[in-house]
Image: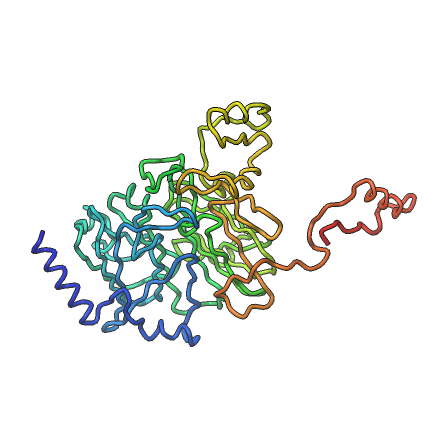
Length: 442
């Protein structure tokens, strides 16, 4: 093993000095053109993530991935011990173009062997990355190389295919985007979101990969709200959102304020005649789905529509106390447990308020508690915001909260006076009212 590691070190030194890719290497000419608008595609944005740099060597795009244990932040106040690529989970997004030849070096710094499977890729069997079936596992401390031509385009993935339960469960996954050589339309903003579930029990810092169904955190790009970055676009932009999943559960991803068309799967493009309009798209384990729409101004929620998934630190084995009187209970328990607060009798909304002043378990987030322009947003977990603005100077900064035009925000009305005014505005025998009035929120 010592000799093997020395040989590996010499090989890697030769790779890095002789034209292979160091993690900080300069990008190839095509990638450098991104800032000058010369790329044949719109670069994908990975919210809370990054894109993997590459270098052109003898006509081949070379990449380097290192899989290792990392400290990963789900949201401010919560950091876990995860397994990821190049210091992050999901790993950096790989971008290339249909017809490219790629060479990907993979260094294993995990305590056990691993491989990478190129999910959905059309490639030689020996490059498919299934430990024991198509290759030997990459031992700890070793570097292996994968090389193949890209014979398709679409939203694909890479992930461990050795000890999947542990390695994927701890975050060893990433997106692999192959752009078409001849795109049929221009995309103004292109995003990728990776779905995953985690069991990080309150007070702990290491996800439990043995959990099969009772997860307590659900993530976009391994982040939970309020730690998820917004998706910033300009009014009228054609937007593509790519959803990837190697999770355990199905996720109906719902976008507010828009109707979109599902345009692609991990198997390829959906022909225009077969595309269907939707406001939610169901993504199962091992699938990707692409959808496109024209952006309308506003702040629009984007989230999983399973009720527990846009929440944090869910407990599944506590009694149901909704509607149960807790009069006098708080004081009696406080005599034994100072600081105890009775909650849940009227629902979960009060948890968000308590989270601002009540200390919870170590390294654990409140179930909900992100701040919005009108108060606490009763969401956590697999939730973020699409922010669409008429005027933007940059896509790289959060534009703040949307300023709704006057008269377009729901608000309180004085119902007795409201209905009295409605009755006065309706002429005898008419079938429709006059002025409907405006609520206080105008």
